[in-house]
Length: 256
Image: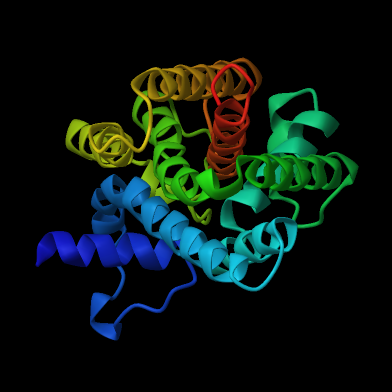
């Protein structure tokens, strides 16, 4: 029951899905619930895949992909896309750490954020459309796996905002080994199951893992260089970068 409680806390935090009133709120439990971040991603990806399958029964591929993307955005409230836009504005518009953080905190979207958001959504649409029916498998696998690098960034890097009002503060404090190990296993388990069931070729899975690891490492190194740590917006940006590069890797000629 305790773990179910933590999963529901994670579900309420990372999505717009309603959770029972008895779940309540606890910053301590939210920190422990971080282990279910990839599992929430698996749920979001599975719903997006189901939406894609239903839409394909009535419309052409491009329309179905757009509707599926809309469903995932509604489920998460564009939580991670907002982090991508804020990060692009901050890194693009500021040079000093303090300036970057100040721009990130501004709720208004700027040129860098708008360009990053539009390009990311267009690339995601094009990649999922290119995958065709394989997108039904890619969506849950990638949504789960792309949450692993942000989890590791939380575990091994410092949170750099000093104010306690930020939404990411409770999940950024004292992320223990149990959280990041459990979360990593949950995020990669669907990929391993897909290989075991013959749904995904082993070499293709290894290639996806390498691309995912490279994207996560590049994000982490960039955050360390620019901020000496990470913020909640940076985590959202890392998830989006990892998700997008995973789709691109799966539909690349050498891996398809």
